Length: 270
Image (cartoon, rainbow, N blue to C red; front, side):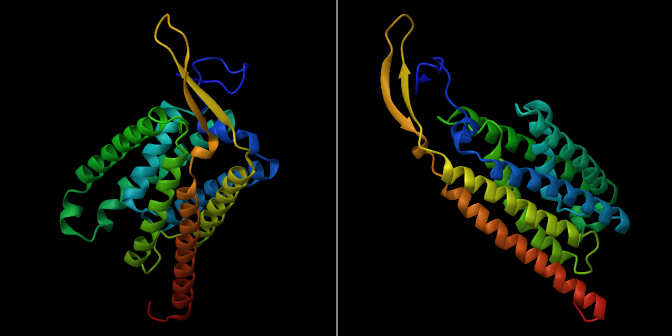
């Protein structure tokens, strides 16, 4: 099978998700995405700093497992082609290692459920393994079973981002004293995610429709057209849903931390 939008495209090469939308990428989108990634690095640093100060872990357990396994897979096993993106993934992975260490070091004593506290380390190991298997299988599904494969895991990353943001809300209600919860990190996550989301929207709306003719042939036979498929067949409504939902959930988390900080400062009950 092949995509042949023009004679310069070699037979047998279907476009990737990144290639499909690369034509509409502007300097503004690149700048926003870069600053957003940097803000996520800042968020990690602030969260790690607050967790060390309070001798605890600062990200929900499930989010840590999902995040670490995603970074490991796309930084070590299947790194992106871009050197800058690869370096960013590697930096995130280094910080994730620190976060995992904090979870291992102080996570057991934080558990309120007796059974979870008793079997904390086996539960953590199983959760980490399940997260890795889920990342790999979903990555294979999105990268190999679609016309425009998501080879860099962008779709997975946004879904994980949403799961993490929702988990932070419950994390707050379990820690009303704000131990390990970084207010600055919450702001960095919210603004960083919003900037990357806007960058994606700019790419989506500015990319012209590109059509590809799919052809196939049996060995030794002639090429036969299977019809046309274009970038207009890739529906991004789910991404818009995630972008809006992430902003609302992240905004709620920032508000909850802000309100709790004020109450703690005045001595009011949480």
